[in-house]
Length: 368
Picture 1 (cartoon, rainbow, N blue to C red):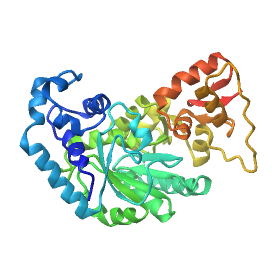
Picture 2: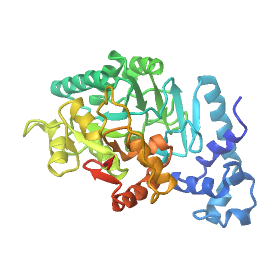
Picture 3: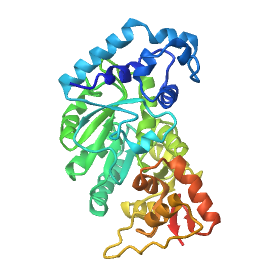
Picture 4: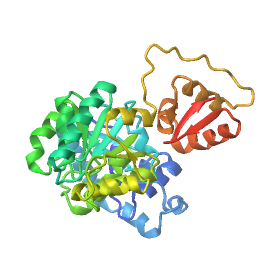
C-alpha cells in the first residue's frame, strides 16, 4: 500500500488551473501536497498563483476520487509514482522550471545515472539515419556503457534508438505521451515490453489518457530535461525533434546534430541547427565524449584538492569535484554535489572572477 499522502500528490495534478509551475510553488510554500486539500481557505489565498476560482476547484469531490482510482491502477500495474520532492525523481528534470509535478514509472533502471543521452529524430528515418543511430549506440556502449538512452518510442529514429540500445544491452527509457495502460503506436509494444526488463517507460500522464497531438509536444520537455545531452540524428526543416532541441537549449542542455547531405529533406533540420550554432556537429560517440568532457582518465589519480581561504565551503566542494576530471559539464557538477544547476551556475561565475575555475566551450569547467 502506498502512503496516504499519494492521493493528495496525484490530486494536485488534477485541479483545474494548477499547472506544473504553480504546483511546485504550492509544494515550496506548504511543504506538503496534503495541506492544499486540508488547509483553510484564507491560508491558501496567500499563496502566489492560487485564485479563488482555483481554491474552489480544489474541493470538488471528483478530484480525490479520480486520484483514488489511479492509485488502484498503479498498485495493480506495479507502477512507481514519482512526486517532484521524491529522491528517486530525476534530478536533472527537477531543476527545470516546468518539470511535471508527478511522473509514472515502470521498469528497472534509475533515472539519476551518471550519463543520460536523448536520441531523437524524424519519424521518416532513412537508411542513413538508422545506420547512424545503430553505429552511435554501438560506440556509446564501447565508450560509456553505463549510460542511459532516452527517446520517445515513436516511429523512425526513436524506435531505432530503443532497438539498438536493447541489442547492445544499454539501458533505455521511453517517454510516453499517454498513460501506462497502453502503448502507442501499438506496433511498438514488443519493444516496450523488452524495455521494462532493460530500462523503463516513463510518463506524466495518468491511465485513460489518449495519445493526443498536444501531449507529444508537451512530453518533449521531459525528453529534453531528463538528460545531459540531446542528439538529433535526422530531421526535416520543421518537426518535433527541433522543438526538443529548442527546449533542451533553454534548459542549458547540450544539443548535438549529425550533418547530412545538402538537399536531403531529412537532413535539412540538422544542417540548419549546425549552421545557426544551435547544435554542435557530431559524427561519432567520441565527438560527444570530448564535447561533454567525458573522456575516461584511465589510471589517473585525482589531484588532492587545495583548500583556498578565499573560497566558501560550497566553492571548495566544486573545486574538489572538478579536480577528479580534466573538465566537467555544469550538469555533471550539479549531479555529483546533488545541487540544482541554478545554484551551481552563479557559484561557477564567481569562481571564474576569482581565477579558480575556467569556463570552456560547451558549458564545461575545469579547475585552474
